[in-house]
Image (cartoon, each protein chain N blue to C red):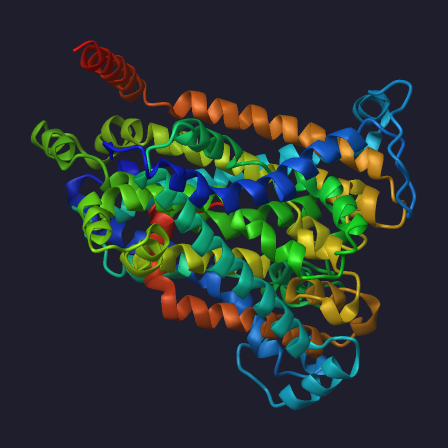
Length: 284
Length: 324
């Protein structure tokens, strides 16, 4: 805070330098742990133990062989995560758009109470219902199934809230009227005319829904007990166990593999992601 | 938005039906079920029929008054939240002040935003294990670094010391979230009426005065929002403390959070579903109180007044139309 005080006109040059140094330090702080992770994924365990290096080495293949020779199957985990995140994102964006459209366009008796209700349940923590959810799924024999990780996405209160905000700004009811005059049914109006209008909102929400589902540990950890059903975040916990105790190179490689898809997504879409965060409170 | 015919109203229900059904089955029912389990003696691997205990509140009483680890977990959750949120909000505000200061005209704020936000998008489990490997004992990157810089004579066992273990978990949370908070706050500042800043500048306010007298008061709502969503998020802190130290909980339960406690009670071999459910309900009540507080503080007083008036007018108009 002291630095702010010195923002007075005279010493701007010095101030700016200090600010840049702080920002660059923070940027390095963001990069460095991941940099070490990627570099160490290519180094052998003796190399890693002999000290820090910021340059890659040549042991990627060895680390890969050690990593996959034990219970870690990154491809399996990748596809499991992809299936769960892909389908749950699709469910979330489609049904949230549908619900938001129902809230904006139609004037029904329970519209306002329903919206208030959505606002109220937006912040219910997943842990609050976890025990009952698990018991319920156990009785349905749905543990070790992906369905309980996908279907609940149909009811995503926070996303309905954001989609509604978007529709209120972007949709003019004349379009809906015009479609009706042209004889379009309500569902086909939504699917063919409204969904394309909503693409910007859908894209932003889809990124966040996908990442949230991809990173989720709590629910999959409770529900999935068979190794071949594990998602990537659960697999990460295997790296923590005894089987890789001294194989540091493989541990780093395993970690790097779980983070790699997210780095790709992030650097391709960072502009939209930052804009999405700025839009307000995309907090888990 | 007001239709003349009522013929389309049914579509409002139809379009909301999937949401409502899924919510009832996968959210509401499990919450109620969890609440009921909290009053029972449900233990063990094989689910038994529901049996409410003679003293229904026994589990809650045990947890709150007799269970040292649960008490510790509540304390830890609060402590870890405080040590990550206070530096987080201070740094986020400082960066916001810098990034939105037109007189400073910093270059590359876009790139800085991208980099500072980056840790937030990477899987928390990966970050937890990564940090525990970075802080490995006796030879890990951090220990090597400390040794090279001459900061420590002998390797430090970061994960087995209560203070450092807690400190690192708090730091990871801080490191993952301050970028997010900063972006939200910057967006908040950009939403402030520019005329306010112009007026301040005409009145000769310096950067310091402008920030504390104009920017901060205008950010009040958004800061409250950040505060309470962060509290509710912090209450659920799970991935980092669960995976950072094995066994989860750390030395002397120093990093045992409420979520880790719940998971441990139910799914780590002891199958104490009743205790876990009661702990979940305690957490739910805390989250509900915080949410209610958020709504109370965020409600737009003028808007709600206006709405009420509009409603009255509408009713009056309807009555008049019927009368005529």
